[in-house]
Amino acid sequence: MPGEGEPPEIELEERALDVDGVTWTVRVEGRARVRTGGSGTPLLELVFRAAEHPPRTALAVGSSLGSLTDDHVADAVRSARPYDPDRAVPGFFTGTEQSGRTRGR
Image (tube, rainbow, N blue to C red):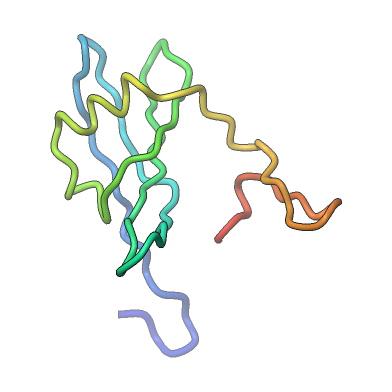
């Protein structure tokens, strides 16, 4: 347990999965909750990496990587788009854009 004044430990969520003959490493890079009523829907930003393939990213409904079945993760890999960690996040006001690596961290 961290001492007083130390940041909490963050559990790294990562696992490997074979999809269509390619072994992908899947990692949770972000979390959000979409509130449409009730307690909201938890979302995970997943990043997929494999040798010989560029990284890809997708969103999945779930609170942790462990809550997703292999079929759900495989579907996310197949529908993933190219991953750009430096993409700009539009700011609410003009000129307040943030890079993708700083949002929510």
